[in-house]
Image (tube, rainbow, N blue to C red; front, side, top):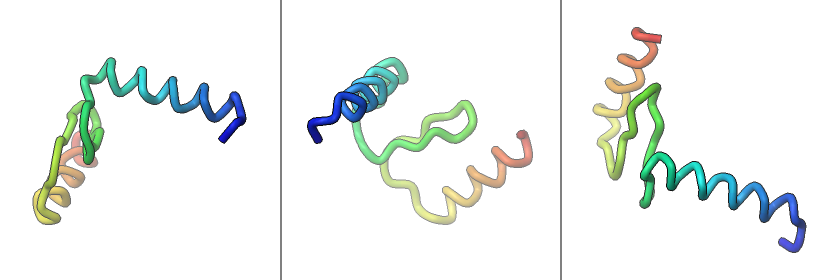
Length: 55
């Protein structure tokens, strides 16, 4: 945990989350969509299928 590379990666990830206005977990990035909070499995499967179809 004292490795500067780890600190740098954590800081970069935190900055990206702030840019995307992600402030909680879980948050999933699905294509260009942010899916926040709990999502039932059936809904998640639909979202993934839609993103793959549009991909």
